[in-house]
Image 1: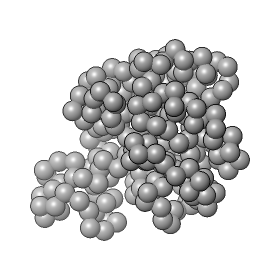
Image 2: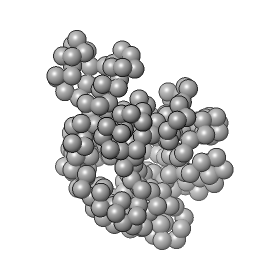
Image 3: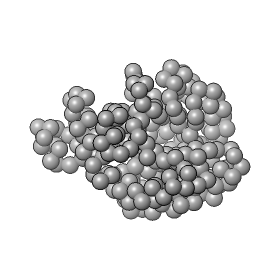
Image 4: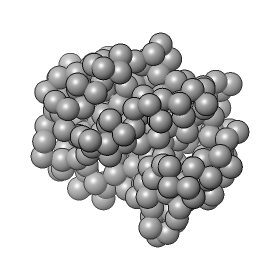
Length: 231
């Protein structure tokens, strides 16, 4: 499994038996390390409000990532599909685009058809929020939706990416993700959730703060999140 996070390093990934990847979001554009894989995304705010696609493509050209999430529209499968046909071939000149299957739990048959027709190869499942549910508030619902989708798509998709899965959602999906990779599908996920202390003990170690002040604290928070998610 590949895990993408702004503070991910090869050393941290090795301690948890995952492959490292740096998450770079348009709204937080800055210097990006090149010693590991890189995923770029418009971010949830960009998907909700509409991303500046020209700026996003320019960012992709500058960063040279391993993958780029194609611009999507939160809660709008058809609109996101239209965005795919408009921009994926442009993005494919610079990197491998990923199709965001908005409301995948309602359009799963269509996603399967898109894969069979070869119109998409890499699929992202939104697992931070759905239009009718926050996945941190209703993790069971989101996990059930994701598991059904994974069982249908694993072995068909070249790559399945989980967008911002809530901690309890990810814990519920660990076994099916292992099975997915055994079927030949690359699996990955991204997160920034660890940048808010994952538990009260970590908050105590940070002197009562929820947020990191420097890279060493961010790494500590990432390791704490990974320990709860994967072990």
